[in-house]
Amino acid sequence: MTLHAVPTPHTVPHDLAAERAVLGAVLLSPDVLHEAQAAGIEATSFYREPHRQVWRAMCATARAGSLDLVSLTGALETVGALEQVGGYSYIAGLSAAVPSIVNIATHVDTVLRKARARALLVDCADATGRITQGDDPDDVRASLASRLVAGTAEDATCEAMGESVHKAWDWLRSTDPDVEVLRTPWARLNDAVRGVYVGELTVIVGQPRTGKSVIADQIATSWAVDQGIPGCVFALEMTRPQMMLRRIASRASVDYAALQDRRMSNDDLAAVWQAHNELETAALWTDDAMMTMEQIWARAKAGARRYGWRWIVIDHAHIVRASDAKANRIDQLGHIGLIAKQIAKDCGIAVLLPAQMNSDAKKRTDRRPQMGDIAYGTTLEQSAATILGLHRQELHEPSTSMRGVLEVVPIKTRFGVGNPVSLTWQGHYQRAVGMHASEQEAWK
Image 1: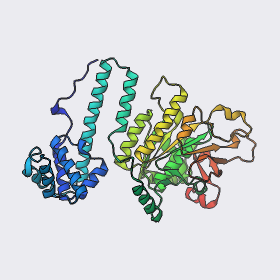
Image 2: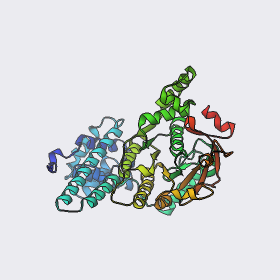
Image 3: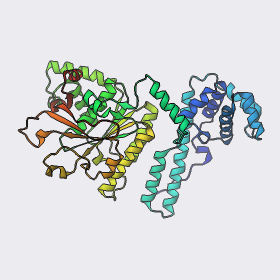
Image 4: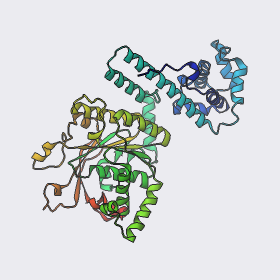
């Protein structure tokens, strides 16, 4: 194996023109400073040390009062740094090099991408050095994974009570929709658990064939198609074409088996074409790669930043690729739960995670899911804000009067009232619908 040398300064990723554009745009419009900070720009994002010094001075000047060419150069001169950064002429030339701030978001993104590339080189070089020195490779891999996922600091995680209470008061007085709760397609379920919370982990648990994956994907498709909320389904169990057939069957009310066998009537074809048009423009991504939670975290973070993802579905917990193949199943599931919770908080998205039940439930008279039923999932249950249990009595009792009924049992509801909800199960259409006519209208 050939070890690659650490890149020389000439090959270190950077774009000085983009850095000058960002600094110059701040001088043209001080509001750009706050927009760039919100995007993640900080002093260490710049490659040149003089640019880092200018950025620090800009931030300090903005905090002290108005930010303009005179106040900025005065601040730099006060600390003896004006000549170090190139003098008055260099600072004055920054704004002259940016005729417009229209494309400043592109320059900010370029600076951030180059900064992430440099950080990646440093992390990989450090990992290479530790391996060559004889460190345990599993420890090195875990350390590298956590550093790659964490990235650079973005928003502060600590604030004064005064600021928090003002935000809460503004939210209470606001008439804007509650963007922190994503509504499911079923009104009665929304009444019971309020919906799926952004920044939290929601787990769907049930026996095999209950419909965990179907329900999770139906919720996701409703968010993307009906509500226009972008997100991604990490389909670990199915391929992208299989997922698309399931969605078409659900949206078009066409038998799933007939779609798979391409046995469709003219009416079916018309309905499929309409569903195709709905799905074609949906803000819905599907990723069918087998990944670890750290890899899913990295992709979710990129999706939230680039495309505005507000949710992800990981289908399902028990087939996520193990980050540590040597760990037992309890530790693996615990790791998955903790990382899923961290993804939700770090990316500011809702995480929906189907999971299997353990076999102990089969020994009970009442086989409805309960707390503690997730296979190997004690820590996973603790990490979740909401756990929804799915139950279909007909799977255990074919002659039951409850045929065609899917019960949704709120096992854990941190924010809701937790009342059970009954839906009509339409497996041939790969979906569930509400039992009331008004709830079924959207699926006709």
